[in-house]
Image (cartoon, rainbow, N blue to C red):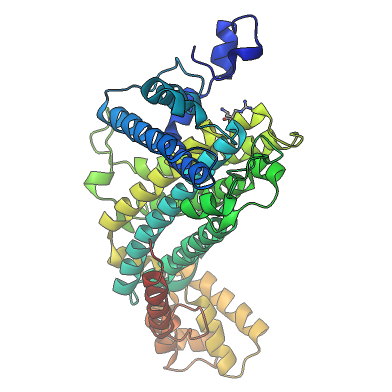
Length: 461
Ligand code: ARG
C-alpha cells in the first residue's frame, strides 16, 4: 500500500477497504494524461517562482523516465498504489528525491483527476469523430455509385414507394453527420481547464491558470473552482452522443440483417465479416451487425449509470465521482470499435441490385404515382386513391403488377387512363420525378452528394 495521505492516521487501512477505495486498475487508462498535466503544472510552478528551475528540471526528467520505463515494460503500474496519481508521485519521489515532493504544490487530486478525465475524454471525442468521418466516407462512396440503383423504400416494413440506394444511404449520412456536429459542439464546450481549482476553493499560491490551460490546449481555465472539480457534464454529453451514435448504428445493423436475410437478399455481407454455424453448414450469419445492435444497450447503460451517480452529489468533489470511469471507458471503447467494424462491414458488402429493383417493381410501390397520374388527368385525389386501391386488389387477385394490366383493363376501371400511364408509373419515373428538396431523384441526389463531399472534406479528422 503506497498512500499519499498517511499522516493523520494511527491505524493501517483495512485490506478490503483499500481495495474497495482504489482506482488504479482503471485510472491507469489516463497515465499519459496524468503525466501531461503534471508537466504543465510543474512548468507553471517554476515560471511563477513557486519552485526553482532546478526542481522543475529534476521533476520533468523524473516524469520522462517514469513514462519511458512504463512504456518499455521496465516499470509496472501495480495495485500497490491507490491510484495513478499516487503511482506517479511515489515513483517520482523514489527517483528524484526532494524535488519530487514538490510536484503536488498547489494541486489536489480533485483538480488533477478532473483534468486527467477531461484530457482523456477530449482525445476520445476526437477519435470518435475520426471514426465517424471514415464511416461517412464509405457511405458517400456507396451513394455516388448508386444514384440510379432502385429499391423499395419502406414504412411499417411494408413496401411504400421506390427510392434509390443513394437516397437510403443518404439518410444515414445525415444521422452520422449530426453525430459529428454533436461531437464538435461537445469538444468546444468542454475545452476549459479545471487544473488550479485545487481541492475546491482555489489556492493561495500565485498559480497562472491561463498558462497551464494554454499549455494543455484548452481555451482557458474554467471560471469556478468548485464547478471545476465536480463538473462531469461534458462526459454525460459525450456518453449521450455515443448512445445516439449506437442507436444509429443499431438501426442500420437491423436493416443490414433484414437485407441480408434469405428472404430479401438485397445485400451480401462479405465472408470476412460473416460467421458460420457449428451445426448448420449452410449458414452465413450477420453476427457483426447483431453484435453492434446488441452492444447498444451497454452504451445506454453507461449514460444512465453516470446520470444516476451524479444526481445526488452535493458540491464539490465526492468519491462517488470515481464511478465515472469504468463504464465510460467501456462505452468509449465499445462505440469506437463498433463504428470501425460497421464501416468495414459496409465497405465490403455487395448489393444485389436486381433483387432490389425487382422487389420495388413487384410491390405496388408505384401505387401513389398511379393515383397522382389520375389526379393529373382530372380525377380528385380521394377518388383516385379509391380507384387505385381497387386496381391493387384486382392485381393481387391475379398475381400481377399494375404495369402488367392492359390499357383496356385499366380503362374498364377508370376511363381516364391513357397509353402514357405505363411510362408514368415506371420505377425510373417514380424516382426521378421526385424533384423536391431532399427527395430521391438522381438530379436532387447529385446536388446533395456534392454538398456532402464538400462538407466532409472540411472535417479535419
Ligand atoms: N480516484 C479518484 C477519482 O477517481 C481521484 C480523486 C481522489 N480524491 C480524493 N479526494 N479522494 O475520483
